[in-house]
Length: 111
Image (cartoon, rainbow, N blue to C red; front, side):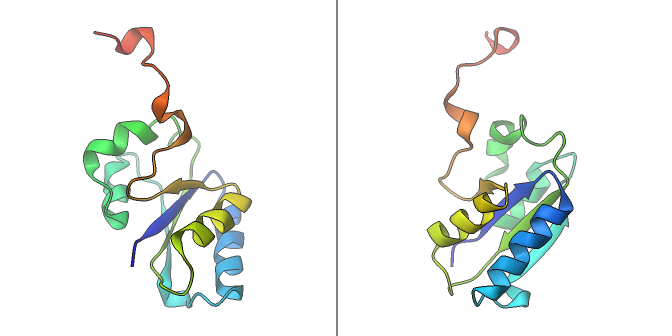
């Protein structure tokens, strides 16, 4: 089972997403809500995303308060994605890059 997570700016949004998942048959013990840490790579460990990918998520971490982690086989990862996104969550899972990941580096980051 592939862990999927959503990063939310408001804890209330994460809780609504969690309730929606439960209503669709996901067991409460298959979800975990945690705060977004300043060192975001520590959150990535919980969804098996390599720590080296943390910089891809840095634009989203400021202002984010909660991360909802889902480990279930009751729904497909795509179904979980749709539910999390419907509650304004940013999807975090292996092999899915955040929306801004393909943008060119800013001038301050260029070598």
